[in-house]
Length: 112
Image (cartoon, rainbow, N blue to C red; front, side):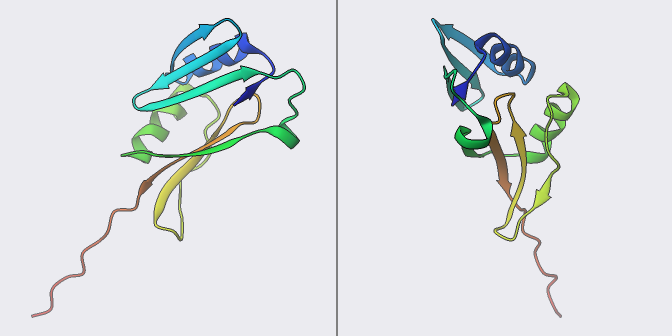
């Protein structure tokens, strides 16, 4: 994903609980099984060149709660018509990450 400011991105991803490794100008981030790669792009315009990724997680509610507490600008949780519970997280460069977990199914009561 593009970044216009490596130092700013490093700070933001660390605040979001990612482990961060900087290799020259490139940034590798990791949190649980999620790995994101950031590279500098001084021409990056979030209105035209931002990226979007969808990450399936085990528990969107728990992840959302953690990022809400970290105050990193997490979006509202919502249930979708495609049976996912999800929310958006947008980094300082406008890159959107959607995190979602399958909605829990409710068993219908048995009729006697």
